[in-house]
Length: 506
Image (cartoon, rainbow, N blue to C red):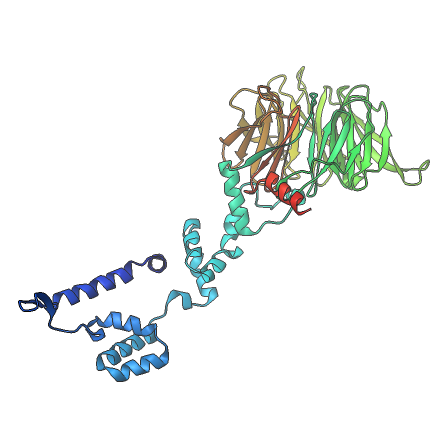
């Protein structure tokens, strides 16, 4: 591939032309003879400079720029020009330049170039640029791209668009370097504990007792005007989830409520279904089953049935009641809806993670029995049907494998702060939010040390807030603080500028 790089540099530089001109001038200077005429008091040149005195390679190059008619006329006018033209024809007949190769051959050659060399190739000519941007050259590196690989189906559902292979590599580099733009999406006057859920075209966030739905704009921005506002709780919403076309929420008023995610239609409400605050909810089985957890140390599995009192209503009916023996902070069901993981406060020798069979309610196993007392789990996310991520009070984020009944990898928060929430693309990126200063860390799960840290800007200067919730897709990250919702864009575009352009067009 050294010949390719040499060709690229020759095409992009003019040093070869300068060398030929300099050689031509040197030959003319060697033959230059003049004398001083006393009568005329001036220098007189005793010979005439002609085109035939130029070197043969220069003549061949000049003749190659002429049209065929001019070349024939030049060959008839002089034997020297005819010889130079013949030499030029011999060179053209026996030499094959790189830009005349077929596209499939060039693509094979370009596969041996690294990312920087492909960028140089793209600057040579339009044809090389089109070929160097082909997805087949970037496919292997795109599969390893950080956060933008879009290999996990749930990550694709959250993304606004499907990225090309080269675009995945570009965005993945931005995630790895932390090259992002931060903007404030929404601000509040009061302090809340917001929860964020992300879809491809909508962003859901809870403020107090209401849940707001914001349309997503081009470039990852979020519209300030909301399409719908969900009401139903008498007190603050603790957790909610958007799954299977349903919005399910649990609140401090000990009740759960459900809405249709598309129309915002109120579906059901179960009041006082727990003796304490409902701190965890989840939807399983395509919306046929619900799971709720509470401070009252109970987990209830509900089955969805039709409400005969309402022709189009639904009614959750309790099926199983589970007793993890401690306060429940989070619940999550596996991708195939067979396993239920329950995160507890882990006090009084209670395991921080307990796994149950969702269908029968049978207790299967405990995870983290070797952890210290009080290492409660505050958030979790399943990576596959056998592995899940969890974070909590003991400043660690762990990857658990149910097949070996233990964690297989862990990442420690170096500032000794509780990890309140996490988000993942399901492949290789992990984002965690801590209890102070709006601190967000981005991890590559293939390594043990974090890539970088970001402090989300508070709504008002001088304040400090925990990170209560995080949602990510291939190019964006949304962070929920006590008085603001912050957006980090890794796509390289400013959502404020795009929003201003859209308003001017309107």
